[in-house]
Image (cartoon, rainbow, N blue to C red; front, side, top):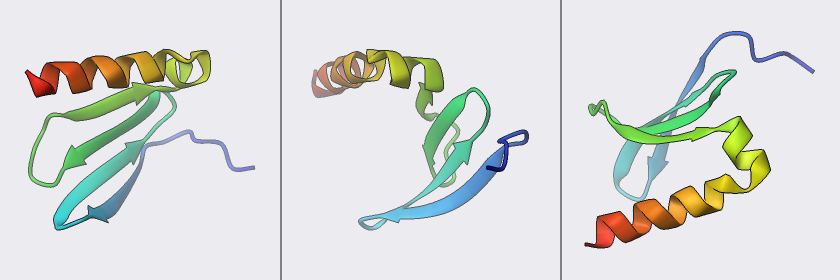
Length: 64
């Protein structure tokens, strides 16, 4: 396997919007193209199960 020792960026289209996906040793970040803020997910949160809790919290905040 190749170690993830430097950030890896990829372009991604979801529906009609374009996003940038950044993978690094800490986690991943999905940002709408041209924006600075996005969704971040740390690898430790993903493997511990906290990612589902964080996603539910973000969805409840976005809905209000």
